Length: 485
Ligand SMILES: Nc1ncnc2c1ncn2[C@@H]1O[C@H](COP(=O)(O)OP(=O)(O)OP(=O)(O)O)[C@@H](O)[C@H]1O
View 1: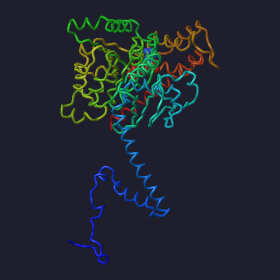
View 2: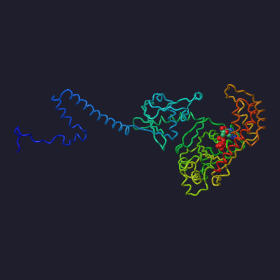
View 3: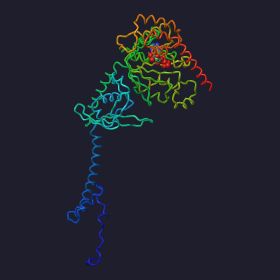
View 4: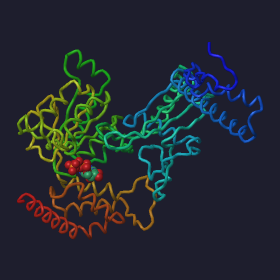
């Protein structure tokens, strides 16, 4: 047996640091603490070491406490809160943002987004229109707490990169496993939003492969679209009977797909888009505008699938579809903007993605270029031609601009001719402007240039016509150079 006699060096004991302690596994570094504490209690350490030791303990326990708190918060977040997420590309986002921006807590948010003329908000006051570039602020990229019906709610706004553009996603959370309070809040946002847009037409356009509300406009009365009244009346009558509450069942009982398509054709600026917008407004529908000349084919299906049950879908420039190319060429080109193939368009119009109950309006400046398959009955049930302005249209456009309306606000420097004078001048103007030469858009633009006085418009009419003809010649020449190249 080895004995220690006081002169030889003591037998080597295994160092405590070489032993793997269970405490070390759970709390790394904690195993050494008792030894240090023992020394400290025995008074073997000087003051400086005391201080160091106390700081070390603080850091050590502080770190662990922080880690446990973070973990606890995560656990509470996962198991004891409810969350509703709202995507940027959905209209629920507009509802929520409009509501948030009107709340006092939005002003207190430390991280906000400043925007000029915030399009997504629909409650911008009319009085604000006169202010030049007004600024609006809304909470952005951060989280905010607020009280709603005695519940503490958390609003989180996060920036997300979606296909090369940055969008914001919003989530609302509350404590507890029930999301009832969040749904109540969203329902309030919806009610408020519907009140704001009730006498308006919401216009949706495609953005990043989804629909986005791009504007909310006052309903345009049908009477402000100047065209053949018989044609307009018959179109409105047709849409009215299609949207009749009993119509869906009628179609379904006869196994006829419940949808209706219209083709509006004619030269640019003759009122095709204006009438579509007016139809949407008069039937209290939202309008979804899709221009085929700036659309990628692979977005077409998802856009149609996302359409609501009742809406107007306006397909502009349908002559931009390519019908003569081979299937291979179509596939090759399908990822390019403005290259939608006819087969893809026909698929969405008839396929499962096409929503029943929607009013489809297609417009074109070149009816002669359209494939017969696209405009066959069933896809297009009614065709309406839009023409350049005839005498009657010119007179009506003139009267719209110069006759006084009850709700007009008197403007400085505007000479007001009485209605009898305006009518007389309208007849003279219509006699000077050749019929079927100028579009309503051209005439309207000229009249608005001279909106101070009807007599002044008459004085400048000849000069305007000469100028417009010259401009047309220039555009034609530029066009022919492009074609030659
Ligand atoms: N028939 C019309 N009645 C009243 N306003 C019209 C008419 N036609 C055109 N306008 C006015 O001209 C402008 C352009 O009209 P709109 O966009 O409706 O024409 P469009 O036929 O759809 O043209 P495009 O074929 O180029 O799309 C609008 O501001 C509209 O108010």
